[in-house]
Image (cartoon, rainbow, N blue to C red; front, side, top):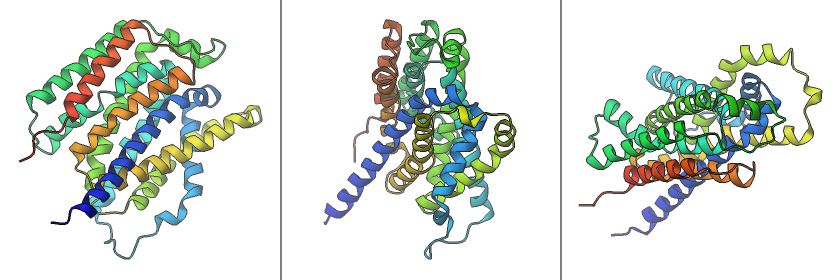
Length: 311
């Protein structure tokens, strides 16, 4: 039995999934300076627009790809509306009201949420281990809700003052983003059997651009673009490319060759990278309750994603 080729392909898929989740966690944390410079709905529209300019050639259907059915078109729309548009809105508003570290702890509940969604929509059984993982995620989020904000971002920014006054709302919005990411994972697995990764990325980004256009135009007409510094524009371009192109393409490429439940293992890199960027780049710190919450949440991730025995 020749297993070298499949094993090699599986390792490449693992690498794509790991890099995708690491980039998501990184850009979630780095979006805090962007939401301090742009209105959230304008930022979302600019993100989708910049990405749309970078990948129009990805919209073309490949010769070996079947035409889209009505069901596939609806799945593409839902993938964009829930996993792209609503996720961006909830996450951007959320990180403007809470710390990147807190967002990382909450996002550690993604694997448990995916397990619940698989049970509801795919009729997969939730084992005792998955139940314990869900409990750990709930305990971690509960500890986080009771802990004071530990963000040490510059207090002169509007985002910093908001994050110290309404962290509970920011945490709630980040958890709504977790639910959107759960839908993104479940629907994405279905789409990878119908469309190529590049076409999925381009189509859902285009839908995100259309959905955010009315809000984006309204805010753009009132916004002073000349007040934005060059470094912020550079960060916006990097954010748009990472959020709409690189992470989506990497995730869909890996998901084509790895079962959805196994792909959930790599969600651990999302909260870890978000917290690391928050501490190392944004100058945030971990309070004792947040550290305990983060450890408990990661224990839940390990329980949810640890592979079972093979038969």
